[in-house]
Image (cartoon, rainbow, N blue to C red; front, side, top):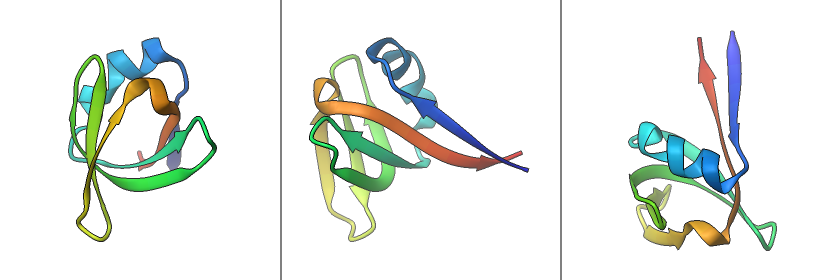
Length: 73
């Protein structure tokens, strides 16, 4: 069974992002652009991820509208 986890508030992001380290996630920015990659690090103010081209990005959490991932259970 597949399950989708969606984090859409700053409180949810701050509490749960560290648990998603090493997982592939979709990131929806406030400008509606969607990014996909593996979460490498997250703290109270920003996250770092690597996309499928192995390019590293750091994003402030204030730029993020939503994070979601599909997981199998």
